[in-house]
Length: 177
Ligand SMILES: [Fe+2]
Image 1: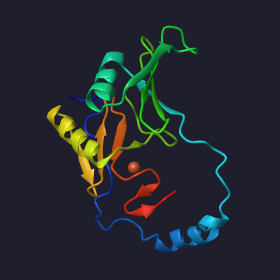
Image 2: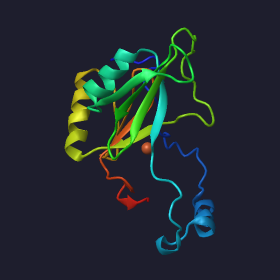
Image 3: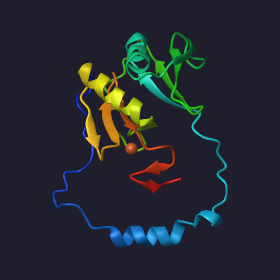
């Protein structure tokens, strides 16, 4: 499956051209990172949905429901934009992935901007991770594997995705939440 923006680029080339920021990061940890027992409860309740933009509803459904196994759960008219579709997929744990289409708006190709979407990481079981990797490869979607637990790839409109086999709150063998 070809994507509009081609293959995404992830990570640096570790070419020795990057600054050593170890001291800066340690200072930030000392200044801001509270021990688990001292942290207040989050004021939030989790990811309700992340919204992305789709150029074609059926293609997006074929990819997310058909290929990745995220069931379509609702589809209706965008309340803010007449003629625009708003539709949702179940990405587990009560979290939704949402899309809009904007027919006739003439959107240009996705461009990376400060403050814009970088990638959406979705946690799945190891078995489902292995199956997704196989299905994506079989479907001709180029994947980029990191650390044996993450695959990065692009959705039908170039949206950058990560499937991670680490459980929620864990990454690279560390507890991050
Ligand atoms: Fe990530």
